[in-house]
Image (cartoon, rainbow, N blue to C red; front, side, top):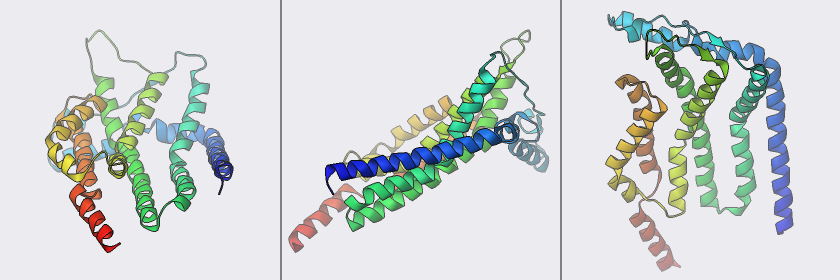
Length: 269
């Protein structure tokens, strides 16, 4: 294929991806009043599944700490005339982006696969599949656990007894989207590491050498993502991220083994 043929293929891919996003965005926009109450605002209510789990753990193990027994509810207010409409639009758009991710990766795979060797094609296919699954695991962890804990801590934190915490709709949505998307992207660490290893920028020995440094950085990043101050919430974020780092080490090949394999291929040739 010529350069212009590849460009034409890329144009078709972009049109298909945009069309899927548009269809999903319109669907989410129509369903948003129902989704907003049942999904987006679910962590504001005391009957959210994660709060029920905490109370069950507290009852099961006779834990009387407020962390396991707290009754929680948040009421949001709107102080911007146009905010509900624009949040309606933006929320529908971002939900369409998240749910269209598997199709986007499929289009990426279909576009680049003809240029790959058979062994490369197998590796890239597995990487894209793992990347998709890990992204949604991160989003689910952010939605069901990390964001509810962060919301409960920050909304009940008091600097002074004379100050009443009132959360605005804009503040809630901004933090909701940012934290959940950050968790989804954070779970792409193995895929990013694998791609960097293909470029020769990292290898298994390097990641093993700086394992302790990585642990410290992960803990700091977890503290930034979840500024709650309690070790439980910090562990909920830090432990999965560190396990992802270890998974990254397992996914890539050691530099020495790669060099030995290349030498064997040269000798056989």
